[in-house]
Length: 388
Ligand code: XIL
Image 1 (cartoon, rainbow, N blue to C red):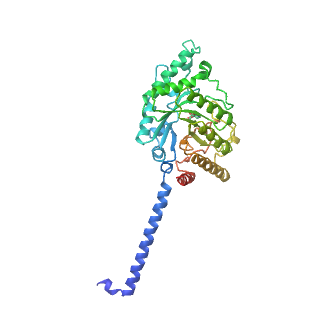
Image 2: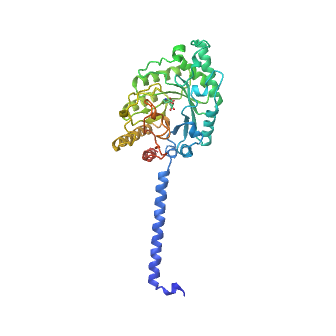
Image 3: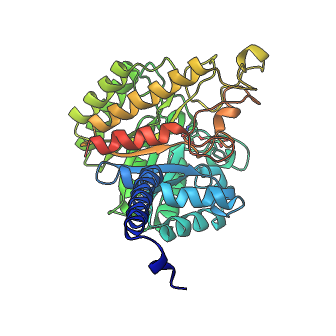
């Protein structure tokens, strides 16, 4: 039997209308859902394009794909990477006549594969450097000439190896105390303040096209910022190339203030250098210490590790607001800020779980302990898009 013939005409029309409405509703729902999905899936890398490069410090497990989810997130969400450890003086140059390239080589290839800007961290630093650098075969401090020559060889070998593949280098890391005086490092003791100038000269000779940076923590502290501004001017007067100052930006819930941070941006841009936010993280934990000198270490206590089980909502809200306020400030200065790099991917892998107190549970990163993007990421993306 022909069913259509058996159904009265009006009923057929109603059915047809109903199907049509259902279809339209379904299509509309699909469109809405897809766009919500696309919005949610928009990456940090896409959202910050044209504003600044958005980077992350990576460790070797991530480069080696031990946890493929992390490796994938790094590739998708970030337009830049920097090695968390493997290019520092000690790991890359453990003995005078031995360099260890395996990890740094892999990291550079990883960044190239992901079409990411790769920067080098760091050439001259008082921490994570082997003792051999400063002593002779009798254990005595070497002469200024020998130290200068060791610096030249180190810098030119490392920079030369990655010439044309690394956009820029943290040439000198942390040469100042917070009060603006020179840190009394071995470099300073043996060579005086000129060690900084030599480092920039050697790096330039090794790769004249690479950008060269001075990098430090607590750049927001006025005395330290003034010392860095003076350094920039002195380097320029001496004819050295310096492109940017890296402000590490290891922050806490209450410090530095937005005003102090903005103050440092103004001073640095007035000095004619660009700014990089090189190691951004905001700890939620109480801190016995207001800096990022990796030698600082304090005893563990439960009071100093209050969020082992959960983060109270009020604290979470405070962190969210602070992240957004700071990110908004970075956007405000996007004309002089070339890169914003977070110092780690997830709360699981952040160095802050062990600094400045070992074995705590901190929550400073954009991805949680289950590798999930935190809700703040969407807020950051929205803010970045507003500034376009
Ligand atoms: C930290 C790394 O994150 C840790 O894995 C390592 O044990 C110590 O160094 N300032 C810097 C970075 O310039 O190199 C430091 O990185 C954090 C402070």
